[in-house]
Amino acid sequence: MQDGWLLDRQKVVNFLLRVESEYNPNSYHNNTHAADVTQTSCVILESFKKQVKQISKLEYFSIIIASAVHDLGHLGVNNDFLINSRHPRATMYNDKSVNENFHIARAFAIARESPDLDIFSGFSLDDQKQVGAGAKR
Image (cartoon, rainbow, N blue to C red; front, top):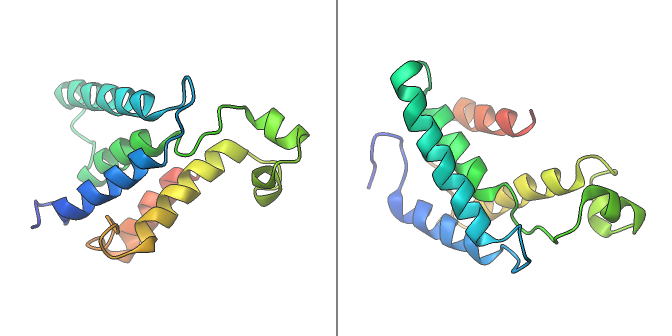
């Protein structure tokens, strides 16, 4: 079922349930925190609509998904700890924004694991690139 954003609602549900399941039960960077940030982002975006008419659907979607995955798989420690402890994630991301790179890379990996999870399948290649470019900022 398409809803104007070229989204398949069941894929979005599957993706978000999978994302939620991969949040670790640590004291702060957990799925409750992700839900709070996502809901707050929605409220802020809705308030912007009254003032700024230039938020595209793709940008809106990207902000909501980014909010949902912003701490995905967080281990509860900061980047310096990961770097200084020589954690494999630090090595993978060459000691650069280790947590942030992991969170977004894991989100894209989940979307690519199966057609049932690929929330980007209805997007043009250009739109997919724009979503990915926003993640690099």
